[in-house]
Picture: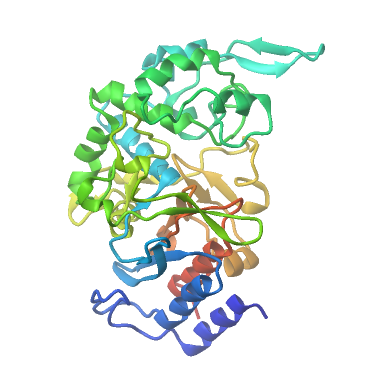
Length: 424
């Protein structure tokens, strides 16, 4: 029996003891039963075994935070421990929030999901679909139909990303400088006509630059920077005071360093938190991956989704809008990456994955349950909302690795085992 299965079995047999306080010292009153000791053991062991340098995790269930703790180091070089207020690069966890912003603008009548994206960014209409001709030379075709706002939300625009490599299309995007901190998204739009589409809009799911484009559309529609629009519509109403594109001086000491996993299992420093580009002024505000945040701040956004658009008495999105976000809209659209469809049982909503089906094996080993909505970031941050069971899970790491670390699946499986409403 694996270590995790032993922990999970002991958790279920022990009867899920109630806790009165989070291990970070913050009180939790009248919380649903949760085996804090088992979760502590799971996460601390990942640090002790060298699987991660530092980890922070939070579980919200039935209206309360039932677990919150931190282990290991946020900055190995300075021996700085992970604390409850550590600031993280959330990278692509930005995408669901940018998507929620687009849905808010839709509610205000400023755009429609069916709108051609070129209505707001004319350069998009000039992009061509590239394929390999019979003579081995690139063949370029016009878009059969214009990509829409919905195509961008669903990563079915035909765009590439430039982060995967291995083919000329990805290489072209990688070489275009679309993530240069000193180049604004407005300037990036002028590069689009020279970049190839890998397929016709609407015909395939491929993780891409699409939601960065949506960030620029939000700027065009509002006349604000993306950060200003997010602050006005989400950060201020939710009290997300620790979330921003640039880490200000007063939060810099709390900003974690980022590491890279090596083939031998060791870690090297990828980006020092104290000299990071995230701490310096820049022009680029990435709707697809630019935010920094804390675990408690991100919980506020997750709670907004769980409560169908309302947070502590303040309604920000209509309930119908949030349900629309957390519904699969891909249908039979083929996925060109193994993250969606097939044995994963996952579809895609607006800005995040939606678990469509599951199996006892998926539930027990990966914690996947129908209805879960969420997404992760490149430095292995991850969150999900589980409407069926009234719960939220957030796990924060700061490491680049070829695949998600095992602790992701183990954490989600233990959260599901302890928060599912039909648990024995």
